[in-house]
Length: 300
Ligand SMILES: NC(=O)c1ccc[n+]([C@@H]2O[C@H](COP(=O)([O-])OP(=O)(O)OC[C@H]3O[C@@H](n4cnc5c(N)ncnc54)[C@H](O)[C@@H]3O)[C@@H](O)[C@H]2O)c1
Image (cartoon, protein in one colour):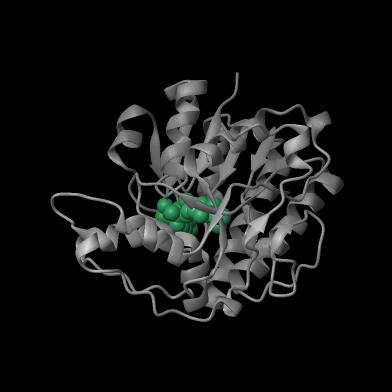
């Protein structure tokens, strides 16, 4: 029987992934943790504990006490927030990963999921249909930590046999939890702000194409990856996954078509002064080979 630990369950991904894991594996078999309180649906459907992933002793206690077999490590400082506190974010993103990997090695945890990001790419990477293997020169502290993290998880697999699995998520689109400070979060914030303030000032240029994915597809891809037979996996760094691609201008045009009695967005156009598109450091659309040929059938 699998016993799963989710670290970072209160965030944008964790709040939905935890519930889906509970649906599949049983409420009592998915232990949710975060440094802040959990959303009611998580706190009410199963075990939740406050955990700072930097607290190695407490993490070890939970892993041992609950006889955890799989870990989903989602806690991180995301791109936008990381740029405000680069060294502290590097510290949290890297040390937390090493903490999890070391304990997984010592305690022989069966599988570890840790998400990477399109932020591993940089301005010298081909922007359209970005291949799995290509130039990677991230120029954000978040991207640098994700690229280093990819190297570490592969290292723990090769050197110690820890069964590490990872996806390079594009920007994820969801509505249940407000986004956690990532660059692609504009695509969700734009709608909240349109309703609240009837205007949105975007830090990205109007033509800045970025890759995106719906949360339900990302959750499916994640669980498919974790359930895939180990022999089907050719990569232990992180797989590209593809979804859709759009820019702030296109989203603005879409939102102008929305109608709601409380938010006549069309009455006042959203404002997107932003930066030139050339300043976007990330790919516009990632290719998803080899993931799509091996195990991922996440697009419905
Ligand atoms: N959301 C996206 O679009 C996206 C895209 C690419 C990669 N990712 C990656 O997916 C993971 C989860 O992202 P998210 O969007 O859910 O982020 P989020 O910020 O919404 O959630 C992260 C959660 O981690 C928790 N946390 C932070 N520091 C912690 C600590 N020291 N101990 C325990 N918990 C802590 C936060 O309280 C938060 O609930 C991150 O690794 C992120 O880099 C997300």
